[in-house]
Length: 148
Image (cartoon, rainbow, N blue to C red; front, side, top):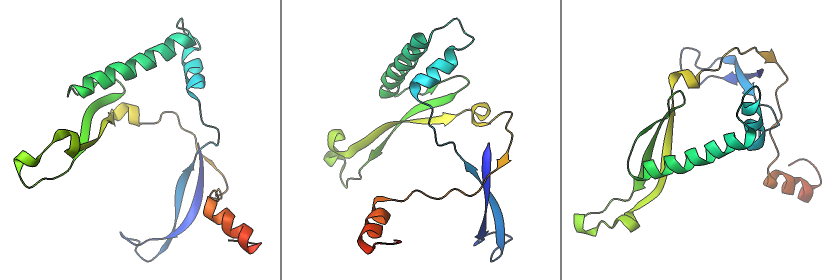
């Protein structure tokens, strides 16, 4: 895994006020697509890429159904999935209307300890990556004819 070192001034902890070097992961620019993931999973397997994709889609559907019914789902070596939502506060119980007060329903994933760990990682130092320019930076550069 690639990493870069950057100098930072610490604002908390035993090194408060001191400049220290901190490593940051440098992720690959290429994102692995769903098709590529299925293809890699199908390698050295008797299961085809289409079958693997079908299992993922079915898993998503079943997981959504179960969590919608309030179940916590044990995903084995992956971790657990549970339903959660945001609720507005009301002053009187009779003012609570689920359709209006409950929002942002979602599934919360908690990876297992084993799934969270990266295995067989080798580290390679690379140069600090430049941050991507946002739309505002690009627009300022065009307006000023130079740097934002």
